[in-house]
Image (cartoon, rainbow over all chains, first blue to last red; front, side, top):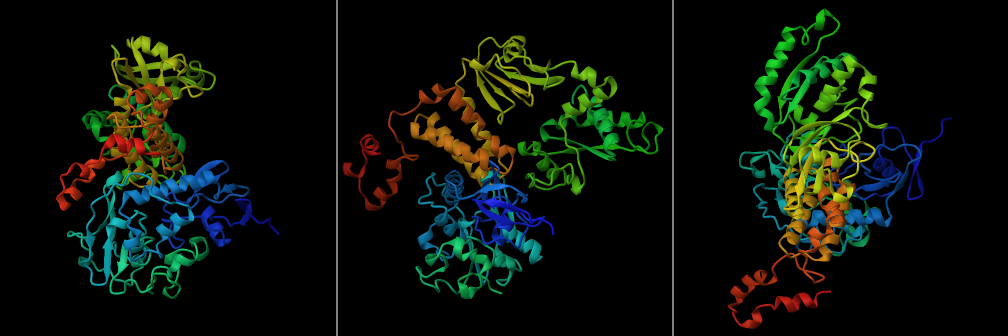
Length: 246
Length: 349
């Protein structure tokens, strides 16, 4: 019998198999590491950096770092938590995130991760970008103000739906999500509300029309239990408060 | 590449022979487009001499050729995996590593990515041997280093030194009589003050890619730092959060201090922000983008301090201006509708 491969996460033993990352092994073992651009159904992206952990003394993204036997991984230590809060604060000031006025509030992964990380205020100076809302599609609304450039919709539309509806345009701080049509309007695409791309947004950027505020604020997904207990909104059925439409 | 392109191509060909590659690329950034015709002519003459193409020097087992690829000049494309992405016609965004280019590079094939200086040295080593190369330099840094000297000096240009030369020696040779600081290895490198001019240029002391910018005492160091901060906002590819957002936040803080509105709290904020960028960014660009600010905070604190407000905190925006719309909407012009800024700042924690 071969010895089981494992590393430690905040002192707890996490078994893993070859090919797993720190993130996938931790999730499989029931341990939560905060993340936004990572979704277990897709190839890791490594762009949001919220899943930073300290691996053998070095800060690395847990979603892209292969698990190796004997690693010492630290996630819930103040140094990592402070780093994570800073990165979340950057995401909050980069866009326009008005939680009390957002339909997704309470079922938003960005908001839930921020609560989990102990973020109390955005801290940095707001950028207040001007980003128009796209309501041209009969069944879906896009509020670009809430986009955090995780590219999950880009990946889902390209790799699962085979439609390539979304793309990221521009460089640096000017990088922004676009709809891949000459008009830039979602209504001009073959995007469908049952598409995978309609179900993966960790924020309130891509919303379903005609069904807003069905669950009152205070009774929503993350209002009662934190994200490390509930899990990702995209991975839950509607009956559990998730936003899946299949 | 202007004077020794043939030597670089020779080094690439040697590399092709050693690793069994059939194809090499020169990735030329857009700023060097003027070299294209000369480089193509050099490649062609090597082909005609049987040094490139099918069956090099008549050896049927050795075929290797070199193509030119012109990039658009993005700084991040100096990062090897972003360079490979760009070479494949994609956005210049660094890949997740591992896997590294040595196993999954161009078109996911094993790829060697090196600087032109390395290839030129490899060609010389192939002819003159490792001992010749190792006879110069220091114990840990063998050979010589090309330095690109620029800024406030009488004789700027490209100089070749054995590793281990002191900064002071270099400054003397290029006629920099009044240097107050050097930006080593480019904007992402390190800023050093006169206290460190006796340090040696080598891997075990001051490592550099070759850029060496001299700032003399007529310069305001913060002008240079501000330039670098703006440069990184422009050059961030936008992929990861700490670099995409952090470069803009850092620029705003430097601008705030530069225009005389900064306080000690802002300097502390720069250090914290710089640390998040340094350890949290996806690639070397974001990890090194805060270097000019972090270094100069340590090496040239006076460049910041002499511009600071004496207050503990200063808002990032003009509060009175921010209230203008509210005054207009309510039709108020009375003195009480305007804030006494000094009193306000005094009341801040």
